[in-house]
Length: 70
Image 1 (cartoon, rainbow, N blue to C red):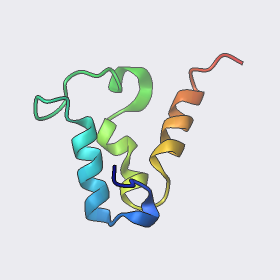
Image 2: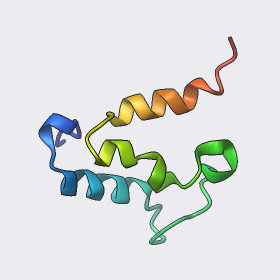
Image 3: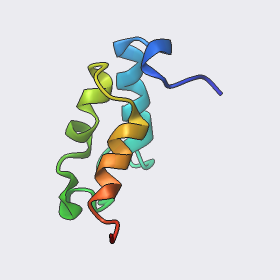
């Protein structure tokens, strides 16, 4: 498996990683509930990764932290 870390990818590769990851086989939004759960547009949610600002794991952790009972 190829690394998806920012240091190992170009911006174009990161765009493709996000696009492939969010494509549920139907060529676009397949109602994954990200919008209704406060994630907004799922592509916008991962823009900091594409721009090389945050790793995917960090974005996911920040998103999930809103739903952890503490």
